[in-house]
Image (cartoon, rainbow, N blue to C red):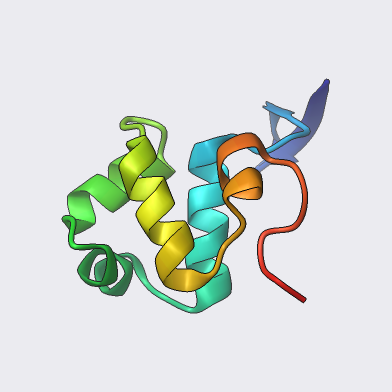
Length: 88
């Protein structure tokens, strides 16, 4: 399914289910980190964080698994987009 929205009056088509890149950005924000802080926590560059969030790069499965273990994020949610991101 595709969701159509407008940003600055420009129609944008986006999948209703966020991509892994969008979930990566969403969890960073939910955890309260800026890109530089998140990069430090994950041991990667801020440039790579930006690339992932903008869809230029894809996070490796090992990076996603590390993120999930470190911050108690659901692997199912991060990898597949199902379930809830954080324990309640």
